[in-house]
Length: 220
Picture 1 (spheres, helix red, strand yellow):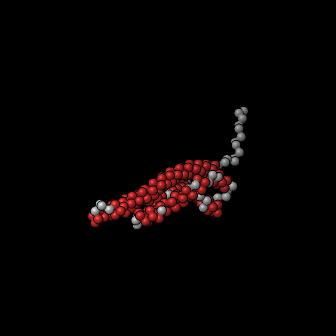
Picture 2 (cartoon, rainbow, N blue to C red; picture 1 turned 90 degrees about the horizontal axis):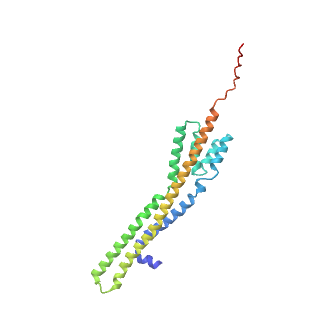
Picture 3 (cartoon, helix red, strand yellow; picture 1 turned 120 degrees about the vertical axis):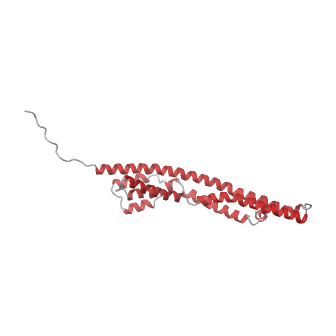
């Protein structure tokens, strides 16, 4: 393996560095984007229990905010639960944008690696072919050993660039699809939560008449 890297020339170093960074990003995102970490299964029910028992104090809201990405969105809605529907929805949407931005962290560098590593391989190919033609100019074509170094450098860098770019692109597409699916599920949970919150608030604000009913007058 070391001989192959050495034969590929100095461009193998950035290609190897890109492969390490891409692998680290994919593993980190796979760990972070687990559904149970982003969307805890019992979180919405727990928040409903807090609301039912009037436990929506700052301590519980802070705990909810630190729980998960879905918890951040629910905490933003609960923090403005006494405001109007439009304001609550706006706060939830603002929090949702921040959450999505955090979920998409490192995806841009991963996509960049998938795009530039074939170019690095192509650059290695060009450099290798330049060396081949330089060797032909200096020594002619009678000695194949003189040409082998440039040809091997061209082929090795191209193969190495593709070997890094293909898995990086697959990982980027897969993670993007997983994020889109998680965002859709968070939207569904948030809409159900918002409807439940507003329905509960309407029921609390609905006046209850305790006045005795007027007596019925009997006709003579």
